[in-house]
Length: 493
Ligand code: PMP
Image 1 (cartoon, protein in one colour):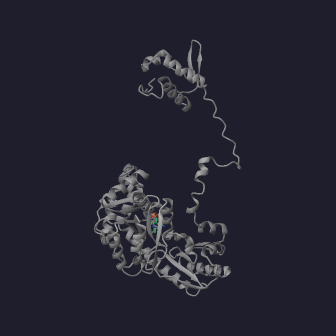
Image 2: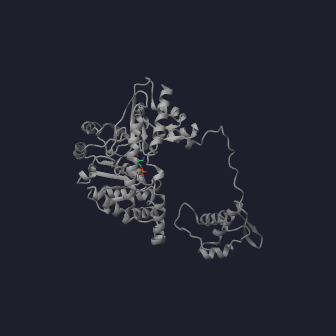
Image 3: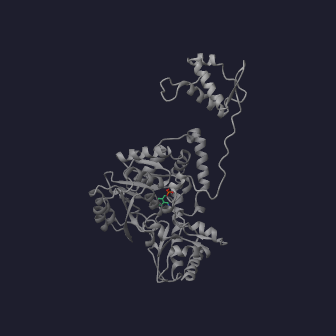
């Protein structure tokens, strides 16, 4: 029998090392009850130790009740003793101390869950306008199945190995080409494939900020980003948004006051307001970030979903010197469950982000990346995008028509040129009106929305706002949903 021994180990004498090795073998079942251990003299010779050392190890195992010595016959393995019973479940008992220490930490991250409220209301035909992605019934499931089959046939087991840490090379190449067509001068060496763009945001934050440091965001902004920044203990500094996006004119003062380490922005079809950052503001933002030496994280989550107007250059396209980190995703237009997003960066920060990605989850699913590459390369993605834009534009217009005069009070919103959301402000109803209060009532009426509070660093600022995803249902269903919303507001007023 070979037992690895460390003769230099001062903390564990040799007999204990031998006993520990055999104990582990007995408890794991590799030395079964009834097996005879080698004679002490033999094992001592095999291991190059004194016989007494082996005998001491056997004595220790005997004292533990794991072996028994039979006179003149040898030492035999016994059945391991039964495990001590688990403490009885006592519903009144406090949590173990370590659990008590983490108690309450999730509370600041908890938000109203419209889908749960809607389920609990058990309406026969619930309509949920709260979601953050496009219409799942349009997702190209058959195309993806075919792409996966093609990849498995073509690449075999290579598609199921870990794959490159920066992401599947050809997919990075395809992404770089698409970005180049939008004026972003990048190569595949600048792309890192991530588990959705959410992971891209997390990697950037972990790489660039420490708890207590400040981050500038639009106010309101994407709720999932706010949660991430809260989780990392960042100081969130909000800049108001109007129909031309973040009010960049107010940025310089905040940069001087708060010395932020990052500016996080959603310049296209901003979540939740739908606004696009105007070109002069884009230029000003990049210039200010440069002057104050602050990196920009550009979250372009639905830039492709444009229904009117002309695309504006990405912030990254206005930056020639590695000031902007660009993040995007295949989730919104395509398949959120694939969890494939990416970021584009250059310089030392790119290397840091690559290593951070590796440390966190090694790589993003190799099979899905290859399937996605196969799908995009044959032009299916572009075709799907065109179909989605046509459908979503109609739905946006349907929601606009449905809103006209159907809700009580004064309803104001910006008609977005793309994206997924209408961001409504409701005035002229009861003084105490809040969309958090309205949500459970709306769910009773069979309709859910995302309440404004989720999108503000100070939740209460959003009490008059709600976000509706206009892409999820055909026009007639949208009309029905808005009718129900009107009923709920009236019932609560
Ligand atoms: N950014 C924005 C603005 C979003 O709305 C979302 C998802 N709702 C994400 C990033 C993250 O999406 P994913 O991780 O699926 O790419």
